[in-house]
Image 1 (cartoon, rainbow, N blue to C red):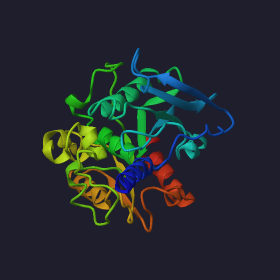
Image 2 (image 1 turned 180 degrees about the vertical axis):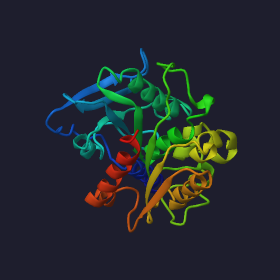
Image 3 (image 1 turned 180 degrees about the horizontal axis):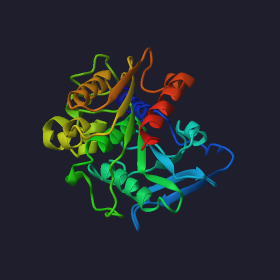
Image 4 (image 1 turned 60 degrees about the vertical axis):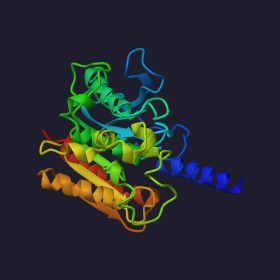
Length: 303
């Protein structure tokens, strides 16, 4: 019994640690002049999870670029409420924070289908909220980091597009900020230099639940869920941040994604956060926030 309780405790810690932004938070106060459109469906008559919050200025002289935040949570927990994106609202951006179906509801590719549907909804409604549909960036942590990376590399992959809403719009994104997201699901265990609280190859691991079966017995599904599989020269620029003491997602996952993007000729930077684990305050220091804003400024505010 003690052993079972211990395993359950580890699993609970893992899921909520993987969220990086933690359990659902109270709604944060908005900067002056910012409106909030909350719990808006991005799929007509869709699942209850297919909703987003949109934050945008009440008045703006020009259409603003958009950054989409995608939360973590081992693809099975987490919330769009909260997140580190608030500084962007005073830097000339609109921000959307989205929910997506969890792995216990539907396995991949449901999650990436939802993310792409949300991007298409934003483009379809850009004129309604004075958004710059040509400049959409994405930012996510952990499982959300995986999904933003997959958005970045699968812009030309028809089978991951899905058929949810606004199919006349593009789901491509123009910049990706990936916080410690898995990039090659098959190799999570093999690349783990730090012994963490979970066996990624277990049938009960978040990765196995995501693809709908043991990760090492479903290599085709794992490959189709891995951002590194789809890297091509026309992918958008990437900014990757990863802690060198991360016990949950090996930093090697970000290093190999960086190397693959660089080999393809894609602009990419990996910033190693020394002493950081899986998320935490070191990622949101003023210095790192400034780097993220500068990254989005470079690629979303230029024609």
